[in-house]
Image (cartoon, rainbow, N blue to C red; front, side):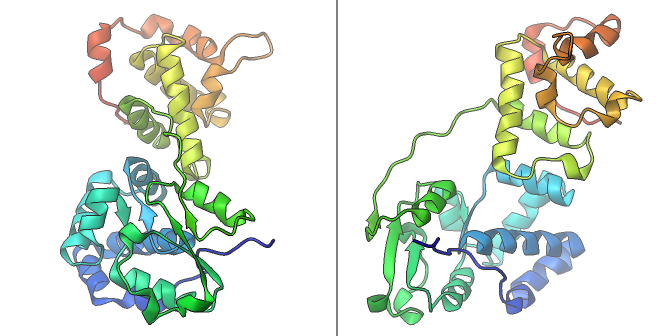
Length: 281
């Protein structure tokens, strides 16, 4: 059975000439406009909604080189101007709107099978689709987008998907701050491109803290050393390397740390946890 398409290859240009977007652009300039276009691309790529949590915000911040506080302000105005639906976002951390859904269902009206989430549906499907001729698969709002992609590739012909998903692996808050900080140390092409890569970095950080018993100041110092070193700056673009070993079976973290340990000052563990991440000046 062929894969069933969910998202759109492109979205209507009238989407970005909306008066509400003009309001965003008038306030934030090209930064606001670029953010909206990227957000719409994310939405229409997977359908008519996009899950937008702290990880997604961090990724967009790194990708577009926009401060997360600016993103928060733009998002707030998107709700104020009714470009995005705030009640749905507050309840599910999902961004969508009546206009976004209207354009989406108009674009897929000839498809024979569609996926919908009842809890976030803002339009009447009968206005766009002949529901008698379409296989409508209803997906639980709590199922993640990766599982939706798996479902669409399966041979199941159920009209309702009633599956639960295992809770996602939990990471520390500090691990996300670490990813945001490390992103500022490396060139754009080496930054994480998806949530899986971000989570790999977060997991690496937590393992360095909880298993390897590293401290945050030591991790910072090692990363800054490697990114500033004449040789290692061209060979160190991911924190995952810190837990790997060289040909002599010495962990790279220890290799780097051995070169700078004389300059490190001991800091109490209680104070280390609260130390904010700051990029290299």
